[in-house]
Image 1 (cartoon, rainbow, N blue to C red):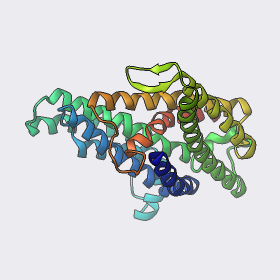
Image 2: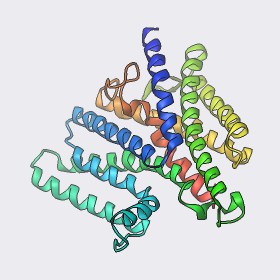
Image 3: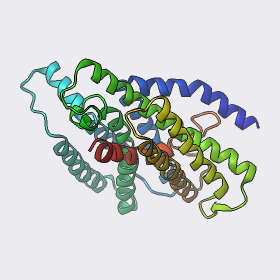
Length: 310
């Protein structure tokens, strides 16, 4: 009960701040995601070291942050030339993505060549895993928010035109904030329902090898709560989505989010640690708190980008 009380007290303080940053969007939200990305990669590297692997922590962080910037491509493409002059040559988004991936792969291999550490194959493999799993996946959380603010060509199905006026751009920005806030809230509601539903009714183990305390009953409670949360979000805030579209996001959170939690549990169990760190009172580490968000973000980003705004 003491641990639950600590978790609740910390959540009451932290949640409004996270939601505010999601609402603000832009560089404020990107900086928050960058902080989560950095802390998660540091904790991921510590877990790998517990297994005797020596990942390149600085390389992971640098490449992860660079991948995050790819999702800010349009915003940076407008702001940097305006700040430094129109002579700046700005690459296309896919060009930037390929350059970062190729430079990262070359750098990680060359750094390992000169590090003289045991198990270079494992070191590079874990470095690449952490960068893609945490860096690229979390970067897509910035991409979700940016779709609504700078990618005006995405929103034809919403307004019926790509030539938007100021009022429509303002509405898009509000929808962007509401979408990320709803996604975060749905993840938290899903986790809470799964925890308490499993405590009250759990009988059948969900994945005993990975997480002995999780049950099918808890997972069903979490899934149901995610659907209910996104239904409410659709009715109150997300009127650009149809009800089936909102429910699909609820399905993504209720399934992919819980799988993300299991994936992190698998990594922690292999590393022999209970939490990724003790940074957050009552909640373990940053990686622990955002494991579902890491998995959900690319799925929601791809759904919005390629289906809702197709």
